[in-house]
Image 1 (spheres, rainbow, N blue to C red):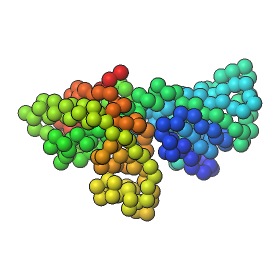
Image 2: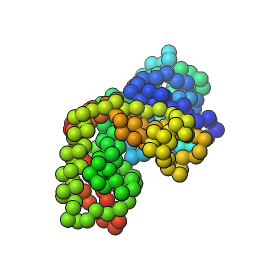
Image 3: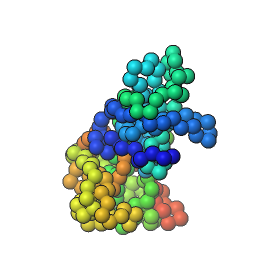
Image 4: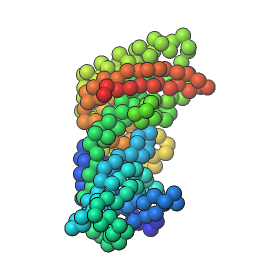
Length: 256
């Protein structure tokens, strides 16, 4: 696809749920799905352990809309998968390039995804506070059907239940205390300072990584969406702490 990278409006303001953009192209995937490409988007694509936003797109002066069911990013281009709806929806195949569009993200889904994702970051901080900071963060899965955060390293079996209780207590203490959540694209050196002087090797020096910072705690690189305040997570329950094959998983849920 010969398009410039999609401008990510949620990187500028991750609490905004509407934006204006320009239609660039309609893309037919190999699986038969229809995807639309815009020059910018407020929709968060699936990635980083976070599910995609959903919502809809309206076209200026046209009497149909596009229901966004899934969003993915490929080589920096965001693909909005879905279906046309309305009286003249079939004419959606002939939308001219450059037409103004209005993007609307489903608020309830965005808020849930943001709370689950923020809770995963909160657990990273709690791991250090309960003496498990020696475990190296791995991947996270922040979907509603069973969120967890995975770490490289093991916890002795006889300590699992104790650490599970300590983690839950620490997490809920931080949630009750609250704290503003900050996210911004920063120069490499400034980002490194916020992340305790250390950025992952996959972030090129001289780049401007996006850093998320929860309250007064050290920041970390992240491209996802988050709550505006730690207290928005409401509460957390650690449902299981499991060690297997040199990996430790922390399974959690948040208040509905």
